[in-house]
Length: 216
Image 1 (cartoon, rainbow, N blue to C red):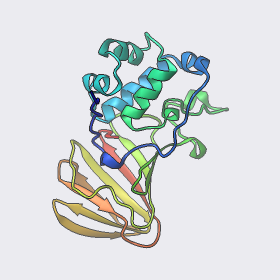
Image 2 (image 1 turned 120 degrees about the horizontal axis):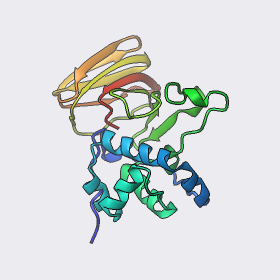
Image 3 (image 1 turned 45 degrees about the vertical axis):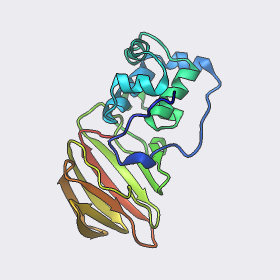
């Protein structure tokens, strides 16, 4: 019987890692301990996925997943691969690169060469500018390749969004109404309004995007 992959709030049926990133060193997983569990919990909640849905998608028990999230149990390599696939990220998402000089600021600061990334098959790349997904807001740098799009159908979820077009052009549909945005324009709307967006131009577009609460 095929297991159902949970639906994610952020656009997408098209979401998913481009390349697999296998981890061979079990010690790396065990040493990370509670940090990995917290990252899994934050991403699962931001993705609007319940423990039951994650259990169904991975074949791992709710009890075991709960213990991982609380730092009571460390995930095996196989379990971590299953969890990352179900949540639509590369396994490296759960192992953010430590800062060399400022570990004490990791909770507050993201250095430009240590951003976590998600790439979508439709041509959008999201870089997480927020240190984590545990707070009430997430900040993203979204790069749209020419003719990339969030999806062919509108979607909606709880919360609010706002963005600034740093470069290029963006077409935004809100409740079926088309809005054309150019470099220097900004926008804000309630995420419960059906929406989608696309870069219909021949040049790259970069958006600084804020979403509250996080809905990766």
